[in-house]
Amino acid sequence: MKQKYFLTGTDTDAGKTLIASALLCKARLEGLTTVGLKPIAAGCEQTPNGLRNDDALKLIEQSTDKIPYEQVNPISFVEPIAPHIAGQKLRKPLSADRTIGLLRGVLMINRSEFVIIEGAGGYKVPLNPRETLADVAKELKLPVILVIGMKLGCLNHALLTVEAIQRDGLAIAGWVASKVDTDMLVYEENIETLHAMIPAQCLGIVPHLENPTAENAAKFLTLPKV
Image (cartoon, rainbow, N blue to C red):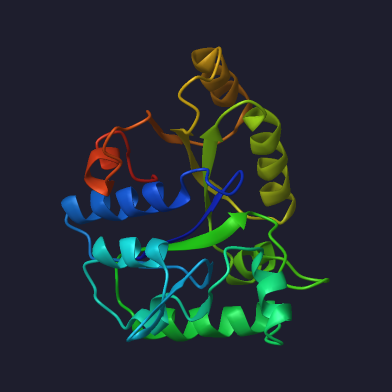
């Protein structure tokens, strides 16, 4: 059975790419074929082969099915700014329809058993004045994995994101707590609150890692139940 998920975070730098890569690693270790996609990326470097984004490259590294970079990350910008602003500056506006079309094209030909589509920023990051990346997940009807960057204020961010996902009629496949603030006070109490208030499976609690590799993070994760 093919598993496809849209992975989002409570904020920028919540740990989305680490968790997406770790889930791909976990799925591979459990014998599944995998592919990770990053349809929109802002913060890319110019290389002899074109623009390349570090997050997208990490997904490729953990994917068993190797597809062209341009299919993994078809929309890329140099500046690490909000993607819709980057697109406006280059007169290359973003749209949900185009993003959906690019993803469907890849998903139709790819046969991977476990697919992660990593968003940019948070769940409602704008594509243009009328649409957000959430519209892409909603149109594709993908269950959502939520990565919660554990820091002061994360409870509000997490619960608002859960509410938005549910309002869009999407299932929450699970959530992951990623410790981004090593000095966070009452950390365990915050974790308990998330367990009590998010009506979905907890896929793992990932501590702050001195060596934050996909392999190390995967040790703390389980795959969503299907």
